[in-house]
Image (cartoon, rainbow, N blue to C red; front, top):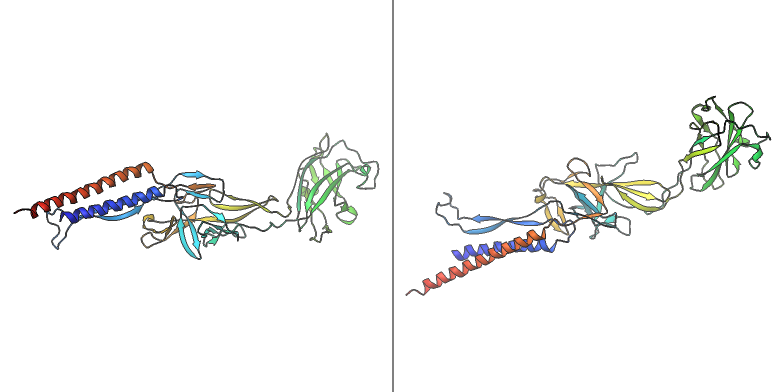
Length: 408
């Protein structure tokens, strides 16, 4: 009997050493979660229960459980490297089969999809056209490799001051090439629907009427509207714009020579003034932009993935989906620091980073293994001592048996 009991102890100590060795071997594995060996004693049980003087039948490995404690966050040079700080796992798709992982070493494949080293695609909530994300469905994260479409300029806003002491120009007939026919001019870049650039110029002319000016818009040297018909600007005796109402100048459509759609420009001068001093343009903004090429990817701590383009435009590509489980230790290990959902783990609870029960996403970082090497070395020594003690028990039992056999 002692042989079998000691043998069970040897097997248990060997299993403990195997688990410890696996933990130590994976100290540099991204997203790895260490395990521990749990033991249970053995007794011969009858219908009446265990005898009060039963000595036991040894030990068995009750379970090898993984510990899902947070690992250290280590920063990297790639913003596609992701780490979850807190609860939750990344969702991966392998041809439709879902797996879950804390390892966030991702990269872009030749088709633009964000994948791990095994080619599994990172899952996100797809963007909705009207804004936001569809949290009811999952999709593959794909980085745009095409150009960002241009947007034609439709609104221009000026913050400027027209000098109150200005006088009407000496020549009454306006000529954009003759500075004696207008008082001030300012230019900016406009964009058509094809992304081509055009030079827009605003001409301001003081009239003979007090506090009154006219404004004209030319694009590429051509008047906007029939003959460059001016719009009258009226200022109050305190220098504020009173007409047109709201300070909005709506110019007729202009047909560019590039083959783009007609350009309809609205100029907002509501923040313009007529104070004493010099002509000054404090700011000018317009809402158009040209074609843009992808220059980078930004991932926020809530997992929102945005593509940045050279034209200053930013486009959401999705929000990283996070999954959590009621019993993470019930997950099935798949290897490659991945797990699969089981009945014991419960169904995956999906959400987004930063919401209740889910951690934040750190871009440009990886979660290291949660293995404490010092602790594992102590466990190794303990398991080694247990193995030696059980081996000594077999040796002692063998000596006793030999003594009985040698009795005459």
